[in-house]
Amino acid sequence: MTKRDVFQAIADPTRRAIIALIALQAMTPNAIAENFHTTRQAVSKHLRILSECELVQSEQKGREIYYRLEIEKMKEIDEWLEQYRKIWESRFEQLDVLLTELKEQDNKEKMK
Amino acid sequence: MKPAEASLPSDTEVLVRRSFNAPAKLVWRAYVEPELMRRWCVGMPGWSMPVCEMDMQVGGQYEWRWRNDENGMEFGFTGDVLEIVQHERIVHTQTFDPGNMGIGMGGEPSVITVGFEEIDGVTNVATTIKYASRADRDEALSTGMTDGMEMSYRKLDQILVEGV
Image 1 (cartoon, rainbow over the protein chains, first blue to last red):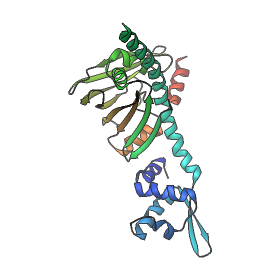
Image 2 (image 1 turned 90 degrees about the vertical axis):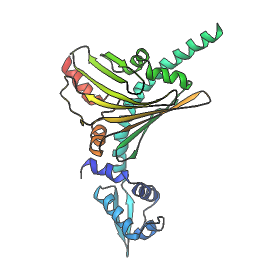
Image 3 (image 1 turned 135 degrees about the vertical axis):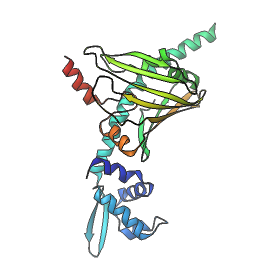
Image 4 (image 1 turned 60 degrees about the vertical axis):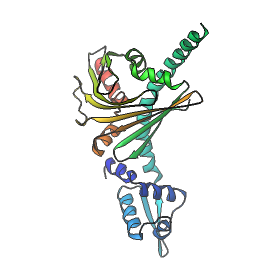
């Protein structure tokens, strides 16, 4: 699976909600489906996409299958965003400096 | 101020949020006055911004160009201003101009929306970059290229090493 697919996986709001749910604890497809107004089949489809992107892992426990979040894979997405964020932050820090100057100028003019 | 936050609100967008300890009218000036813009967009050591021209009115155009003073590498951005609501919102297109760097990025322009919201003297700035396609966005993300500097630190490091 390529990285692009991971972004596809998290672009869907229902899949993001599933991720948030199972981040807390591993759950069965039925338990997950109870949290949505959509069909059990739709939830299964979302789980399949998430599995294909290696964002979730399934585990057989007795008669039930539990889905849990692959935290490491989520970290990978985080790292990409972090790179993006850093570049912006370095610009914004310079903007902070500039704004401090502009505020001082503004105050001086008001004092006059 | 809290550091910038980045998120993915949809298939084709990236959202960057940051707050500034200044009123909206001053933050606004830093976004629309070329001489002020140049001050905070130069950014990387060894780089200058020889072109920073902006006509920030609807239908106006802008051109930003960066130059590595050591090796003469250049790249930039151009675009059209689509919408201006003073002290509140700027919407413009953005096309990457690879200059002489020999790096490509999706040819279709992206659309940048910058929203300003002042609360108690603090201005929240929300920048939404809407790419022409998911592929363009993912490419921008995966290479670390962004709207602003459009160059990953890795690429920059490489250029700086090559330049020495």
